[in-house]
Length: 198
Image (cartoon, rainbow, N blue to C red; front, top):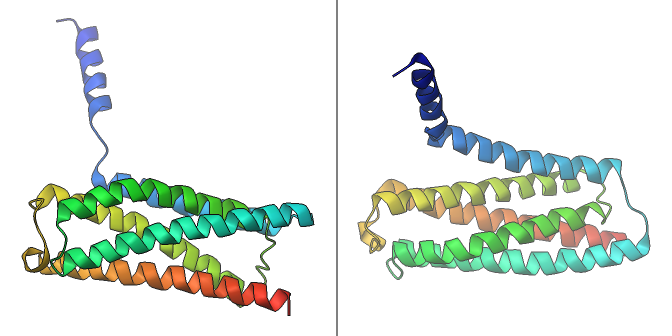
């Protein structure tokens, strides 16, 4: 074998090595945070004041919220049913696989339409809402990674009392953070919108 062949094989071997789970996780979190930051900056720098655009954006915002939050509630309910023994890990992962894409599209719709809704980012309430949006995005990503990691380690019929205690705690915390951040963002959006029209 020539030296050229050796160097080529070493290069191809290094290319084929997958990224470590920790590195991939860091990239995913950075991508989500970056997308969130772009939307926040765009909303602050490029306020859209056309009332027709605002009405269309409000329609898409409400539709995206209904679709996204509905899917999140379904996954969180299934997650709690799994934790307390009424669903298997396989059933939860199957639901998550379908719902995750729907939630991602809905959150994208919320962020995109939110730019045109002229959020007043100078107020503490609006800034807190944007922090809650980031929390719900990162929590959703972490919960999905945790769930699929458990699928590789636990039997598909795992449920209830057979769930390791650490996994039980993490699953419960993910569901509680999910609901708190979604409900908090929705409540702040309602309060802010009501204040504009009072």
